[in-house]
Length: 219
Image 1 (spheres, rainbow, N blue to C red):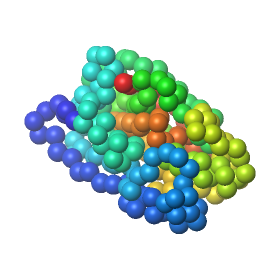
Image 2 (image 1 turned 90 degrees about the horizontal axis):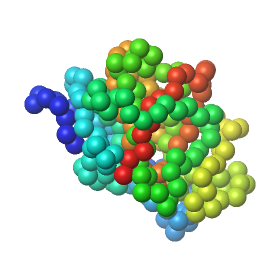
Image 3 (image 1 turned 90 degrees about the vertical axis):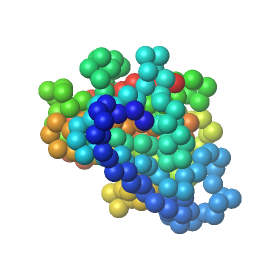
Image 4 (image 1 turned 135 degrees about the vertical axis):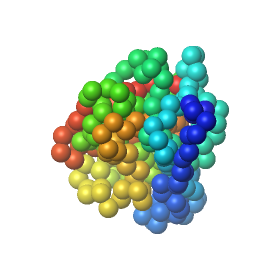
């Protein structure tokens, strides 16, 4: 991971230690009972910089850095806090927001640009503020297990599950569901990167939907 400046110091922590064990206990399955898909012993990595830091996440051909791919393979979602893209790269991509609790894949499994990068730009007059809504991220296995629990049909590459509609999810945050809250203080850059082959994600509106987050699809 390449950071601008020679004094870029950061701390790194696992967001949900023992994730696969949490999933097995919550859904009352053993390792052999999971649907096909990726497992994560630990889920989510948070890298928080001590000071605002420019990060080179991807190159001019939208190729994600190899070091970040390696972290995503091990931990699933990677969140970079107090980090921002270069001025040129902040102009790229688009801005999206989806309906609440629609767990979905941004890219099909057959697509090469399978990584999603979500961006809160600290230089943008709207995105400078903390956002009201969050992004929830759930492993492929856990998504299917929740769908089975609710009596929904599952499929190996099903693009969307409308789950947790009638359940209080907040006790599951940072235990089953990774919650990227976009709530860091005013003017804090936040980046979230995930692989659509291994996780589903959804918006979560606790009060209102807030502003759209920037998104790029990377190779």
